[in-house]
Length: 128
Ligand SMILES: [Zn+2]
Image 1: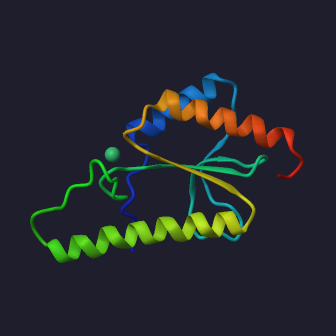
Image 2 (image 1 turned 90 degrees about the horizontal axis):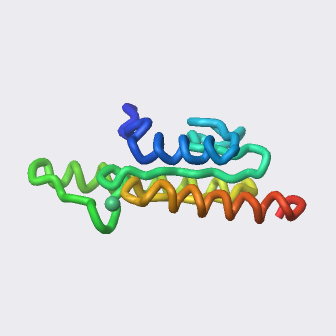
């Protein structure tokens, strides 16, 4: 199956740059053991998985557009993507990960602040 997910979207790159500039270190496109999907930005030590979801492919409530041709095919495709996102989120949470998902339209600076805040919380508590 072809991967439909676009890699290295502008937002994800911008977010990674800001995180790096703040001294945070992470793995990109990292596959946690036992999980069938990759994590966009993974803080392995803290078990925090960050995803930046493209508005079109992941069905953002603000920007998702319905393609005019092959309506049924697209509907199934995009619904499948969203179902997969939910499965991956659930699998990670079951494995003890914190999961944060951001739409690619969010301000990367705001997303980075949320991530740092979450990390400072998780670092303080021993294994949640
Ligand atoms: Zn959007």
